[in-house]
Each structure stands twice: as structure tokens, then as C-alpha cells.
Image 1 (cartoon, rainbow, N blue to C red):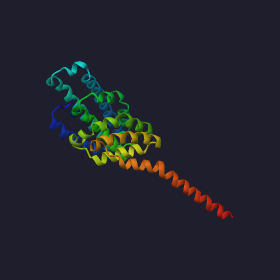
Image 2 (cartoon, one colour):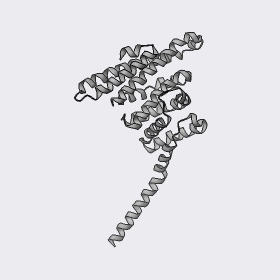
Image 3 (cartoon, rainbow, N blue to C red):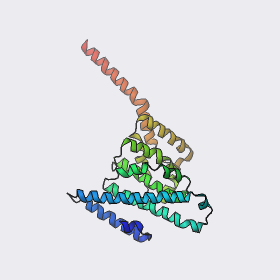
Image 4 (cartoon, rainbow, N blue to C red):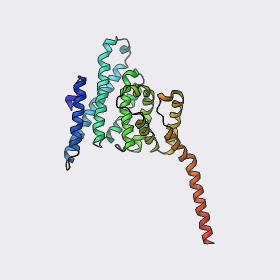
Length: 254
């Protein structure tokens, strides 16, 4: 795993990432393998933290005033390393998701307020790969591969939904594994697990973005409709049902 993470050779990385993923999936299916699984997860999370620390340091470097004055040639090593670390984190998250061990990753990613703040200051051609990680987390939550706490889900949406919206056009064209329908379903399901007031706040903010950007913004209309019904229709229907039951009870007593 460490050799793959440190490799700069694109074809070799791509092929060995697939091989390691397949082998770990097979290993995960072996019964009575809990001890080995725990050790593997610890190893993966150690790699995750290392990649994330490197990514934050690179974003800080890319936001320094003198970095803007450098030539394209001098910026290239930093940009390449950002792309590499983002790809590493995406791969590690995929491994954790198939092992159903990605809940801690969701919390770790949701807590990256500094990275999210620096995100908007990096050119989209470089930064959109960061949003691939966010998108995969929403897909995992929507599929039930991840079961993070309500606070983690809320923090994930607060920290990373807007950066994902800002990068959405690039995600659709630059991320090979990106499936718009699946991602939007995952975002919507994540929002709908929150209390109604929080759903309202997030979905109204989304609506403002959607009305400006259209197809360059996630389409969360289905989630919006569910929230609307839960807020404005279901309470009325429930109240009517309770009234009917009350009337029936009174009639039977008479």
C-alpha cells in the first residue's frame, strides 16, 4: 500500500490500485479474520492522516502570496502533488468503504475546516479532485456503506457541500468514476437524515445555487420535495388522522 501511495507513475499506480483493492476485498471475505481486519484498518487510517496532512500543507503553500508570482513550470510540482494526494485519499476511502470501516474517515474529512476554507482559493482545475472525495462520502452514506453520527453528517454538509457545488461542473467532466444521479441521491439522503430545520436551511441555500447554476449544480429536487411534504403536508395529514380517530373513539363510547 505504501509503495502504491508513493508512486508517481500513472499507469503502474492505476493497475496496482485495482489489484490491491481486489486482494483486500477478497481478504475481507475470509471468516474469523477480525484481528487482521483491525490491523489493516489502522494501517489505512495512518496513511489517510499522512496524505491529509500533506494535502493541507500543499494547500497552504499554494495560497502563499509568492506562489502566485511563480511561473507555471515552478508551480507544477505542487499541483501534481495535490492531485496525487487527492487521488491517494480517494483510493483509501474506497478501500475503507468496501470494508465498512469508513465512519472515522467521514468525521476526519468533515473536520477539515481549514482545507475547505483554502479550497476556494485554489484554481478549480486542481481542487476539483478534492470534491471527488466529498462526493464519494455522500454516495457511501446514501448506500449505507457509512453510518456516521448525526453531528458528523451535519458537519460534513456544512463544511463540504458548498465546495462540491462550486466544483460540480468540473466533477461531471473530470472525474471518471463520477455518477451524477448516484451522487445527487447520496447528498439528498444525507440531508434528509437531519432534523427538519437543518434540512430547510441546507435545501434553501441549495435552491439559491441551483437557480443560478442549473446543470452546474447538484439537482436535489427530490430531497426538496420530501422535505416540503414532511414540513407542510404530513403534519396536516397526521392532525386530520388524529381528529378522525378521536371522533371515532367518541362515537364508539356513545
